[in-house]
Length: 128
Length: 111
Image (cartoon, rainbow over all chains, first blue to last red; front, side, top):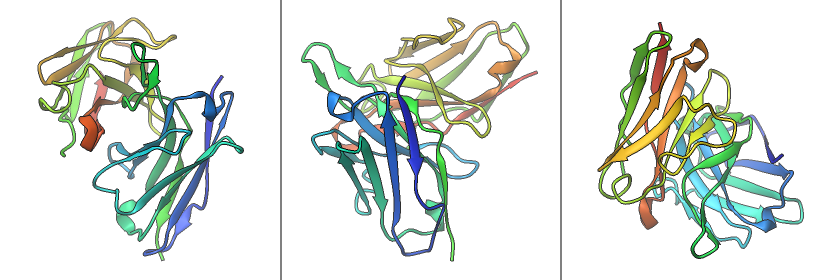
């Protein structure tokens, strides 16, 4: 079955760049679907960060867009997240997930906002 | 754009049914049949339980059902069980500017 696994540093200093990768197994990213990042601050709700397609097409949360870059490496079957100029407010569990959006009429994959499966998540703490 | 609005908490006794609401606007829930619901137990990743308003992924109990009316979506859990105690989040596609919105989450307590 499709599995996702996040990896990256668990501690980032304020003003620096948070970098995470998501490795997908059981499915080739190049076969389709958008792939997304979602985060959850401790004790708080979920926040969508952005999605990427294997072609490199990206969609970002407008509130984070100026600081976020999501990229894809199809040779490694991975996609990655970079978040610049981090502060304590960026401390969260970061999840990667597959967006299941698919338009059966046009046979195009799309951003639909329903995510399955999810990675286990990785806690990133922003602190000096 | 603001998050979708959910009640902070709901509760019910075993065997009962409960409904969690998720209120958006005409720009998100009201415009698209792309509402999803997630169940999250403490320390675990969210699990998809409803997508496209009312569809259940394979393996999800038919005790979970979803619906939508206007700008409000609802998740109903029938025959409450102790293992249903968790946080529940709604999510909606919100158009080509905002794209994806989550609700603030609802904590379900099984009494």
